[in-house]
Image (cartoon, rainbow, N blue to C red; front, side, top):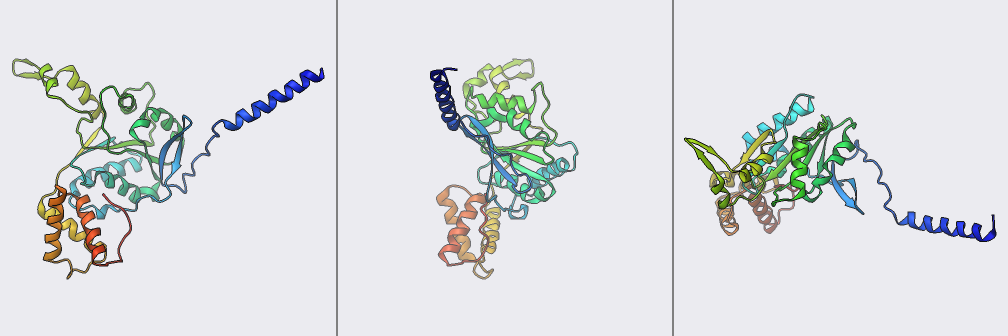
Length: 298
């Protein structure tokens, strides 16, 4: 081999080494025994599961005013954890009523039995098949969590989610359920013009194709659970609960605190669990109450 050719080969190898150094390095497999919650992340077009260092520690008992919803979803999750049949769940309804917190509280309750949570953003739903393949043989149960889900027309994640829920040539792993929250029952905006496509045959009503398409995604969730706005008494009950949890004595949680809580709700235009939580934190802070939980809720 000539010296020139040998020198050329050495230079090419050096260039290849520099190029390989710029490529994204493979991420290590998650330690499922240590981590409880994960987020799907993308870096240089490569997806990986990133452990959440400090998962929310909210408990089911912290969620006030939604006992019926808790019972339905807790039972579905228990069936899943026991290896029985269970459904994917769509949680819809009023904002700030505990939809997302309920999913996180389920992780807190069932993590010791092998439940893990994977949060996926809407823009990453195209990667669902990769996530399913990644966890298919892992000896844990997984809830794939999509928070505050809604779609505009023709978004690619919409069809990806439909396929995973029901319609792919391959079956979804038995150790995975999808729990999604949304303020929209059908996950997509609905317009008055679409009602003009409705046809009437005698006494039968046949929605148009556009409406049918929008309904088809939410119908793929086997369990629908609706959340409703709280009335004044329910709102004040939640306020009282969180003031107590934050270390405010029963004597201090009197008429003055309740009146301030109602005024707070008026300024926010909502009586929700989230508004009650925010008021309790503000009130306890202003009155220099330093004890109580640091866990985030609602």
